[in-house]
Image 1 (cartoon, rainbow over the protein chains, first blue to last red):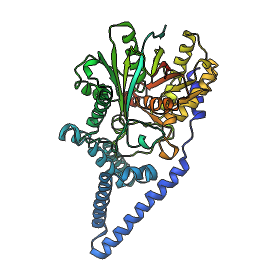
Image 2 (image 1 turned 90 degrees about the horizontal axis):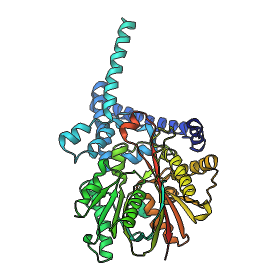
Image 3 (image 1 turned 180 degrees about the horizontal axis):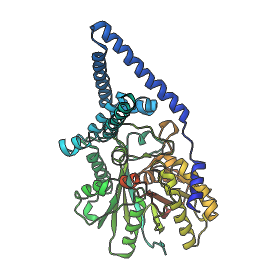
Image 4 (image 1 turned 30 degrees about the vertical axis):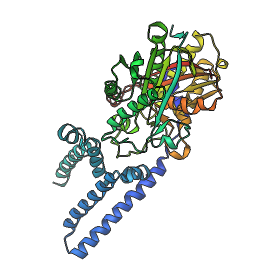
Length: 145
Length: 325
């Protein structure tokens, strides 16, 4: 059998992923995290009387703490399997990726294990996040003057 | 010629240890089960070394033997540089061959061990194979706690360790013949669809085995592939039919037979431990089959080669077993 024919056979038998359903689940779970974040910001502003910018900082801190704690307690991976990218795309996902890498390599040494692998998954997010911000700023300077 | 018959080689006994998810699976009468992935050790790597040691020691104890009664230790696992087996081998001061064929390692050890018994002065050989889900996840995929969503075609690495005692004196199962497979790739690059990667290798080895030993499919009561999974075994059936005009009927796949549907393990089990666990603790316990052809399949990829988008080569080794008692 030729490679092209085999690829067709594999494609025919392999089940299709429910992309639309996964999208819906991610939208709902990701959206509810955002909603909870917005609620927390409103509470922080009204109860503690801080500015919106300051409240945003506190919110990031709270979300990162909760995500890392749940990763360490072993709940988060099960939820990611169910919630799909709804939990990976927000700040929760970034914190979770760092915490899970740290857990994996904690016995391989502080430098060679933990340090070297801490940003194993999150490194791409930082690199391309900074790069895209840089490009967007240039675009804004050119268009916005 | 890739096939040969053995004169006097027997599987005298075996000992199997299963992981926490596998103990709730369709396996029955396994010897020992782990309650957690750490197995009272600090790291998963150490846990897998202890798993290998436990199955060897318990098999020796059952037969009131010591490792000095064995002339050779052959084995392998999935870890980089088969470090688990190497670090375990140091506990046993006997000649040792470390081997790697990914999930086809068990069949490779059976073929090498049987040839050694038939053609040299070696009288007893110990075979060892293991896999640990979390060690495999860490090495081949994402960090253990990350839990990245997986497609339906992916398989779940089985946790377990199996020791097998190979002897010249007649025992439970006769190792009758074997066929050494070739490395084959048909352009599949998706490491999440191992069934599709390995199916052509299984088909090629089956065809070679039948042609070289002048047998047809009816000669066997059962053909058992290693870890193609439920999707991979469907691909194999259609591939065999279209390419070699072989209609697989008395056929099962160990990966597809291992877990319950409710266990949510995608397309089924995989890993070097998958085939021997299902063979020893399910197929042989049924007492239904006399002549069994096992075709262990392995995907010979590394993370670097998959990231470089190269097609994944696969291998399949076949061993014909005859149940005596």
